Length: 368
Image 1 (cartoon, one colour):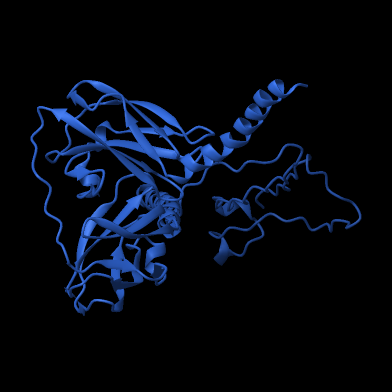
Image 2 (cartoon, rainbow, N blue to C red):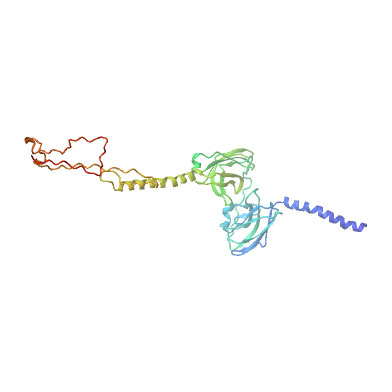
């Protein structure tokens, strides 16, 4: 191979070696957002493209007001057109492209297209957008030399759930973190915003004031109560914001209130059983009874193949027999009107049974 042929080969090898370095440099610069056009009217659409994001990351694309790429979205997601936002997933190289409808945010412009990660490590980027016909209001001036808070320790949620939470009571925790004043002036009675977000939904913010004064270069431990709605369960995220900037985020997994489920299961068993017993009591009260006081019962059923012994008929009492005075000639004169039963003087042999089918004829004795 001649010297002229070696030069192009070396250039190609160097290009292949420098390509990964260029990709790493672009990734190290952070995520970026590019718009197909910088101005659009309501009802139109534009294409949002990005690069440098984490591969296979879920992103949320929103149009927000009162924001700028340098200061971010001052009012948080409450200043964005959340109903017209779009979700997109980055490819294996961390890039994406998504068509976004243009909608007016709930606050005046300046406006941006805000792109942020939904899950995993937090990252965001903004691109300036002019929404035609939407009012514009200057951003609030940033205070120079004011105190600035910075988180110095890991955020944690202190506390535990009690027995009542298992039956649907509101879960509660205490957000604990240590902050320091890295500014040049005192911070007195700062007002924090504590937000709770369920899944991919925007957080709901609640203002809470911390009593105390934090001098420049000093630090303090902040404890703020956090409470969810009754019966809440699932994956939540607790965020702390101060001065329009999110200082910390902490995940919170809330268990399902199984006591409520157990209560409804027992209710579905106990109520039908109680209704059945009440119905049987009513039927037993209105059921007709026998004359003797006993309950009327149906005929007795005999299993097939079983023969019951025949019951003997009850012996009926013998009716009195009318007699005549001449029927017993041997009676004494004083006993002429009395009945004398016929009898046989001849003894009956005990060994000779009398046939039940042959009737015994009484002996007739005439009058003397």
